[in-house]
Length: 58
Image 1 (cartoon, rainbow, N blue to C red):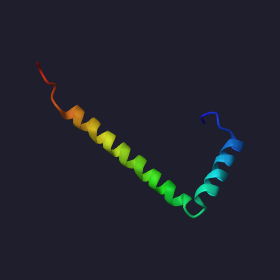
Image 2 (tube, one colour):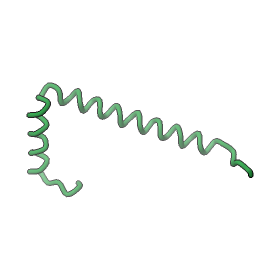
Image 3 (cartoon, rainbow, N blue to C red):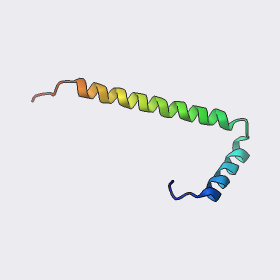
Image 4 (cartoon, helix red, strand yellow):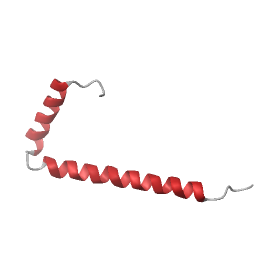
């Protein structure tokens, strides 16, 4: 996973807890997850719209 081992992930997690606090991290992850979900939804809608449009002739 991107060349990150267990010690590196623990250090990153510890830094997050120190910066944001333990109570704020679930809110941040929830917001990140909903943002990713919206992005995927929007990109799939664009793909569907692009495939339904007829080809333009010049």
